[in-house]
Length: 330
Image (cartoon, rainbow, N blue to C red; front, side, top):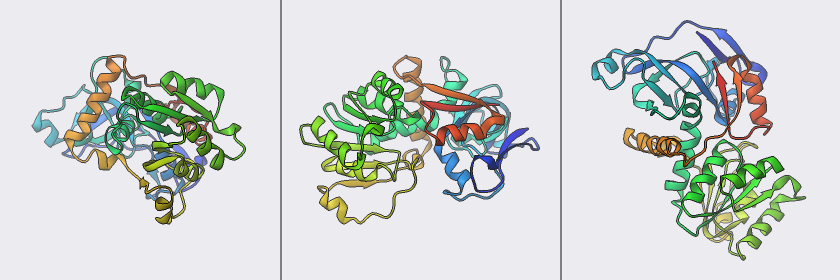
């Protein structure tokens, strides 16, 4: 098979396309011919060494494709068949033409959802889903701030929050991204690059837009560059949901800052904690796939790259030059 390997911790230049032996599924796994692989910030964190992993290793954790072989236990159970269309959110080694996936991690892909959308939705879609449904369950009239609103998670998060009846304030980096955020349902959009000092100016704008209240929740995937502004944008007892660090990790936080900000809450959630069992995993995925099939959730695929150009895909993602989802196509 062909696979993209990170040879050491470093920049995109450490990614190499290599020929590797075809994998053989373990008893509880299936072998999938990958049709599309999702490119996510967590892939760049692992490649760079921010999240330590053994090197060399095959990059990627998300994708979709067709089942081509079954492990012995999977075959005996009869719940998955060769030829079935499946997706997954967390199976290491997805930048490849073949991928072993645990049967417990498989997401059946329904008719009406194509392979590219199926690969684009699991990680970012289920992240947006748990943020809106579980981390801070939104209700009609809630006011929230979404950073990076034209990104892969951002566009889905804006749509789900608006559908829940929330008033969505969004930050983006360009006029093009503002249009995408508004089309997804954002009520107010701030182009942060036009602010001289977003750490002070953004919270002031948020309070102007909320009649001085601040927002119930801030969904922050940016991290270091936006953390202070996010904290200052909350209403008393609001929630800062820090679910990513595209600008770098946030330094240690003195808990007294949460007190001074109005007895606010800070959480650092992850998808694994919100898909703790098979029922929860399938429940989130099935709702998202149903929304897509019904035309009620738009999954924007902003860029596709051949597998051999994975390094360019990482450069585009880290350079914030993308909107929506980035995919690799084997």
